[in-house]
Amino acid sequence: MPVKAFTAAKGRLSVVLDRFARADLARWLAGRVVAAAGELPTFIACDDDEVATWADEHGAEVLWSPGLGLNGAVDAGRATIAGKGFDHVVVAHSDLPLAEDLTRLVVADTITLVPDRRRDGTNVMVLPRDVELPAAYGGGSFVRHFAAAVATGRRVDVRPDPRLSLDIDTPADLAHPALRAHLPTWLRTSLDSRP
Image 1 (cartoon, rainbow, N blue to C red):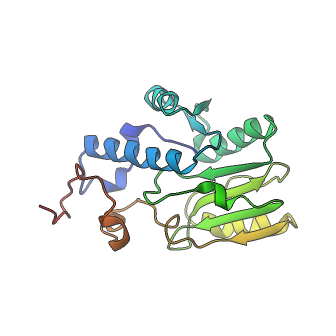
Image 2 (cartoon, rainbow, N blue to C red):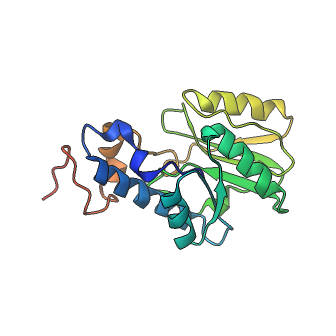
């Protein structure tokens, strides 16, 4: 799981959350995704000391990746994890508030892609260890990842999962009806109508 510095995360939410609330939200979201990994060995790709400390506290192994950016950190992390002998690598974004049981996405010899709800980004990608599929995150990543996955000749499973497809990037995402009941009670935004 790649994790940006908590203090730099969720910048697009600055119109509804101050920097402290955004950092707290980023920590909370990442914790949800780590919990969804269950008993799977968990690795956090980061280049921030606070995130590394947080990862240690949550039982995750840190994959230190300074200056690599998101795609470079994911590719370097996948190579490191593959070298440890695992059959598959699950790459999940750290902002999936409804994430649960990521183990169910692992299917033998199958590339599994979970697009975001707009079918623009790739929220979760599961790759067999021997598949070469470079990370291509950024706008339109789902189309790029899907095309690259098909080009490998391996079986590709696209799962538009309503829980994993919901990520938090914008104020509109915070107001999504499926999410409102799950947000932490301490989170208050200018969109909030809760007492």
